[in-house]
Length: 483
DNA sequence: CCTGGAGTTGTCCTA
DNA sequence: TTAGGACAACTCCAG
Figure (cartoon, rainbow, N blue to C red):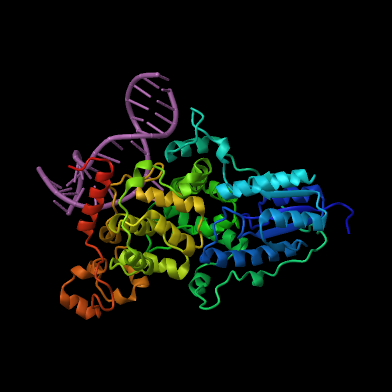
């Protein structure tokens, strides 16, 4: 056993051993390493994990533990208030140092600040690193010294400033600290039992950093060349689907950037695809920056005049939306994809969001909350910023009159209906022409397809034109411009 | 402090 | 069939 006091690597949303600055820094000290994860469901300000996130976290921790094990380390699991557990592990281990990669959500910042103070007071050194964002929120600002609120100038500035840090290899074998009594992962009950609803998620995703790397490599090799067009096509599986891995840090944004930048240098369509992809990656940073600078974004309208919006209280409508029974095939397909796989194609997210907010006039927070519970990539910053973007209440948001038409969006982005047929077998027999608007088809067409509206598939719960007019009127009234 | 161009992802009507 | 403009006004941000 080493005579040196150990160093604790506190894992949080950086569940990887490759390209992990805190772990690398720990390795460089030569101290015995104690990798620690704390499941904290108790600290004030902690939002309880959604169901899909709990499933993902379970598997991610298994994967991290296995990867650490290959380097000779044992992941220590603890459960409780982060500060209390961390303090306990410091005492039990006699650790002299703690390192971690920074988190940026308001609750996490408060937690980490308190942890740092506690460690300082105990004479334990604490150091944190950036492994989770391209550029940290305090390192990019407008010419006036303010945080960016508009994406395009932010992106231009990021392109000027950003350089991916060099990759450093983690040693094959690391000195381990003395093992402490661990919590058992199974005891955390992160997986669903009765019923086990996770089958569809299992079929859709492999969890862990090896899977993340493989997905990124495949995406860049096969798909990125057509990304600017095909990323909008839910009937093609042509987005990167890296979001859950990025959320849990099974892959880091610097690594993604480095890999994609190699394609930037190739020129032509591949380079244009890589550029478009990195722009999307930058949206993730932008959202995290916005939430960091404006923490109230998580709960309240960014544009205050939206506080007066006449949201409808409609629990029945909300449930129909959640269950994919609105009668609009594209909306229902998206909601069912979400329920079955823990994921939804990005364009469809905008469409179902627009439908909830504008067609049903239900508060965006109801949708945000459902996404939080069901998405495997549920991420506070991305979730609230994107919902506020759709609502029109956010920073740099869509203008209010941009109301997605679920029929024309379907015809444009799922032209032969393969996406809606996949998720709504009830309408699978409808011809392409009617598959996005089955109610409009002649009776004999529906009869031939075995579709009886109101029986095996709902009538549209609102009329598009009426709902659109109602939403526009409500927004107009909000601005005091109704005649 | 002022100025002026710009601002992720749409829809619908008209000519 | 297709292309263009209205939809609203406001805030952001660089110069």
